[in-house]
Length: 111
Length: 472
Image (cartoon, rainbow over all chains, first blue to last red; front, side, top):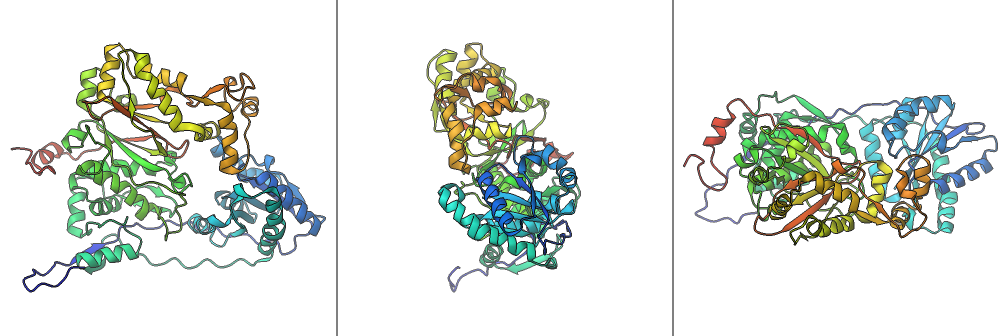
């Protein structure tokens, strides 16, 4: 801030506009989750980094302990969502999800 | 989070696994993607540095519990969108200092003082384009905001640009709005920074520095246009460093000033200009934007034969690209830019060499020990890679598995023509530099600069930033 001086010329004021722009947020209705996981089919979707292979193996083992009738679709079935052919994998993903008849997916790994 | 959105759109609930340091970004991305409230299961800590025992314990004790909590959680209604200002609304009135504080408080500033974007100043920028102020150049991620012509002018004002830079600013914004640029990855951990390259008559008209010290702050065109791009990414795209929530550049770097080609030198050499390399007409002015994740040290080339001149360029390009080049193999893109000394370019030309010969030799000579490309992914993401497997899967050429010697040299460049060459810098010294892009994130995207009908008149009568009237 400037200090007051007796001979100071009054500083101007500035009326300024917003530097951003309108949002075009899409809205996607979230699907009902899995209140009763028993017997459900879970797909694993992986970006092939951050040890997802290890993590999914452990997740599958732990969930199976808790819900013995739960089944799983391994990540190779969906493709690498962060590889050289990422656009093609994403384009095919909705059909893959439907074809595999999964009830939910676990997506990883963000890090 | 994009895969979560795809799954939700396909009709099934999605649950993300995200490590602690990325939770805020995950929730911000979910909001931006329209899946606010999507379930994020935390992995506590930093995955690549955990032992196997630690990873097992964390998955069993924490990640699975977080997933189970998500299975049972009801869907939350998304928060109502905030009412935001219209483009010409006055959002604040106050002194210069008060404007700075207001913009800092709202995360609308890059930390340096901004020029207050008054309607008069913004209108002056708008007078240099025939495009409507509401025209949308594209939708920018991560906040999914509309990149309007007006917003370009506002941020140009704030960055300290001159109104006549507006055609260049529009081309810059147009380029980063192209989905090929992948602006949605600008907050990734490597912390890459975009670089504007200007090629064409407009570089001289706007008095870009193309000679010594051209990549330093100082000259108004180079500096303010470079600053504009980062400010636009902050204010419109939504890439805000902490205390913002979206930018996960682990260390990052400051903005690059805009790089302009030395057109007169290129003409003297008889070489095609950068814009001609990209398929544009020599009479065009062209803006290219690409990411920069690494910059070489100074590269001094001595000698009077191509091999002598190339030796340090190839070596220092290779060491600058280094092990991170595995990403070029994983994601299929790699676009280094050679900023070539005019003096060295002249020496190449005297030997009968042009850009094609330089590119081909770089393609042949920029190599690294194979073990680094296989091992560095472990450090980055927790998993070794195998070049032989990638060859077997048809992802990379067979030469990458020509032997199983981990010390064998393998190429780092994917295609000769993907190396850009711009001649500029101190004509009195033999120094070049290399700017390495971040694989598929921020490949070069170019736009022709569209000038207003009265451009020649207006640019010839403008006040020069160097203090001299152009007509005097």
